[in-house]
Length: 517
Image (cartoon, rainbow, N blue to C red; front, side):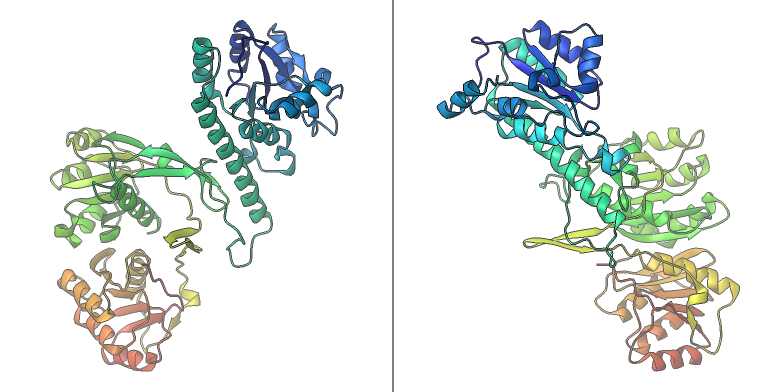
């Protein structure tokens, strides 16, 4: 049962780092007949506002010590919070030690995630929060200014917080301290990073940030969760681009919209510094191109596979021009993403009521990648694609030309973003054929060649893993490719190299595979 405030004056302990709204909260509590207890800077702020407040030091008889590391850690405080008022033995202890119950705790923590350091590891705050949350049968715990309004409204209307409200606040409180501890563990992992990039334990603290229209299928529920620090990338080194993205038009986003948009936005920013465009369908690119201007890049990306582009995601790494918007408008597209929109472009795109138009900043570097399996997660470090010809090995009699090197780089960057097994063929800054997700590499090569339809003659072929047989290399030759990039490492590498020499092709071994499942 909850505390009845008819028989004694209820008491609230306020000890907050973020003081936004705390004076108004305290004043309203005072007006409702509550006694206020506070500490340090919070007590000073309340006193300066003219509110009657008891300092924790006066309550306990001990001043803050150790540079403010020890303030509220005292039986007068925690006994008052943790006492089970329904337990006669607890009531006897309170009376024997002259401890008054505390009915509401308002505490938020040092902003560790903003500037991680030992001194910002809060001890007293989490202890207050956890104590109040544990004893939520009798105590309300408020951990953020966003909760002040609803708490005051209920106290004003009913004189007490309901059991359901206290349970909900307790859950939020434990989530708050769990996220805080997870941030500290994550920081310590950056101070002494594991050699393989995989920490001995993972502590994931996420909050629901966005409701989605539905999950992968309409009968499934879906939502986007974000880390509770609001930051992404290794060590939480930047805000998520999803949190700052602006949706200018269209329906609400679905699970697959976000999944595919993430794939498109990452790939378009992985293609280098030139203007680039990609078209993604079911998380796989069906077109990608770089050019001297974004108009040409988009035209080539769309032309690679206009059939698959229907219902796809389009991303460009330059401001969306009116010309690109006009070219895109007649094509049924689910999502368009750009860093900005030039005059006229938004008007054209938002006129299509079902098209979701996103304006976004670049994505942060990827963090650890996780997948569900029974009883846990599969975890791996991200697949980072590097392009360093000096570290590669030309294994054929002929080395690539400058033009072939450029096409090899584009094909290699794109092949790493396509579901395995995959073959990608490119020519003149555009990907013209993609064979994705086949159970054998020969079929992937055949599909890529069919989609290229002669447009990759004299261009480059990339394979995400080695060619186990020469037939995959023969397929690249059939597509007209004159250069090949692949990891190498097959027991039949010599046969594949010989086949490349037969075709007069240049072939490069990178020594690095890029499977993607």
